[in-house]
Structure formats: C-alpha cells, structure tokens
Image (tube, rainbow, N blue to C red; front, side, top):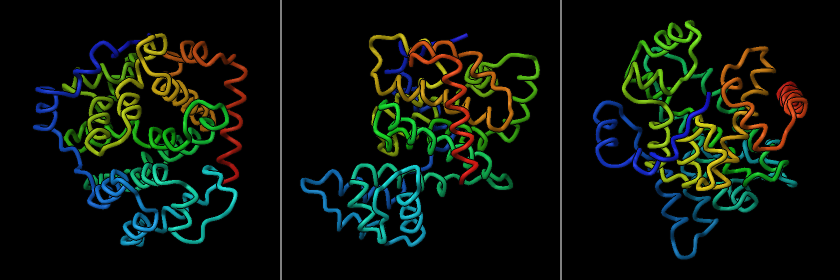
Length: 288
C-alpha cells in the first residue's frame, strides 16, 4: 500500500497546522553556531576562512567535521588536516549541511532515554545514501547525507512528548498493520514526517530535503510529474538503503513490502540488483 501527500504538502506545514504542532511538541531551535554559518553563506561574498573560524569556536564540532570530511563515505582525495582545509575541500554548502547533521545530534535529548540506536541507524543511512547518491548520480552526496540523517528526526520529537510512543506503536504493529504515519496520526494527532519536515524548515535546510522528509513514506509520489526529481530520488534511495541496512541486520522490513515495487520501478532496478546493493551496504559497514 502506498499513499501520496503531494496534494496537501504545500499547506501541510503552514498556518494553523504549524501552530497546533508547536503548541504541543517543541521543535529544537536552530543552534546559534548553525545560524552564524548560514548567515555567512548568505552574505554577498562568503569567506571559507570566516566559516572555518565560526566552526572552530566549538572544538567538538571542529573535530567531528574533520572526522566526517576524512571518512571514506565523503571520499576526499586528499585528507584535510585542519578545519579550514576541510571547508575548502568540501565546499561551503556541503560543509554547512554536514555541520547541520552533527548539530542535530546535540540538540535533541530525552531524559532517561538513550537515542544512541536512533542516531546509529540515522548515521548509517546518511553514509550509505551519500555513497550511493554519488555512485548512481541521483543527487549531490551532501544533500543525500543530510536527508538520511533528518528523514526520521520527527521520531525522537514525538518521543519527547509521548513517553508511551514506542510501546503504543509496537502494540499496534503486532496486529499486522504497518502504516507508520497513519498510526501516529491516530494515536498522537500528528506524524513524524510532518514534524521532521517542520524542523528541517525551521533549521533552514534545502527545500528538497524539507519536501523529501515530508513525503518519504508516500511512494505514489514517485509517479507524480509535479514532484521534483531530487525529492523523488531521495525518497527512493532512502528505501533502498534502509532495505539494505535491514538485510544486513537480518530484519524483516515491512516498509519494503509497502514501497519496494514502486521504488524498483522508479529507479529501474531488479530485485537482484537491490539485493546486490544490500550486500554492498553490508560489506561497507563490516569494514568500518
């Protein structure tokens, strides 16, 4: 079963719907460090040196950016030895998007609940999406990386508001029904895709990422002529990558049953080619 939110997407995060969500669930404010970075990028003549100086104000962020810039998933030919080198080699926009993902992890905390499994899963998705977006020439690797990190960011936001979130969904899914956003709407009067899209918009992420987060469980949109190609590519690639990660973990993936056929048709992949991609993802993380 697939659904399409395209017809309501333009209004989904405006007006009363935003006010309603903000009145019940707190969206983390955009970090000041990210705001400074985005202001510099919006200037008439952005300076890599000034951007490096802003990032260097936070030692943890500087170290994390260097580590990510030098990872095999980013694929720089020359290793960066300083923040300024990382910024110069990554480029201003890519550096900003990667930094956004790093800051997100620090901004969402839930008392008494470890989000390590969530971030581990998100990081794997982001790394694999970055790699395959470039390999399959679907979109910029940094856009894919950012979407991979943020596509399910609404889940911990729901967990902060509803302590029974996981238990409720586990019980509902035991019935054999797996339509996550509809279940969330039924029990919590909102869903993680809408919340995640709102957070991405609040943080100033690219429009393609905002829209893809909103649409990423609605696979009929892959046939929508009005949807942007980058948005459709992100939604399709995310499901292939999540299938590969689940395959690596020997987990059944009901979401693939919902959208796999639509995604394979859109990308022009056979099931054996998808399985080969899953094997490549497995090898990728075994080598890490």
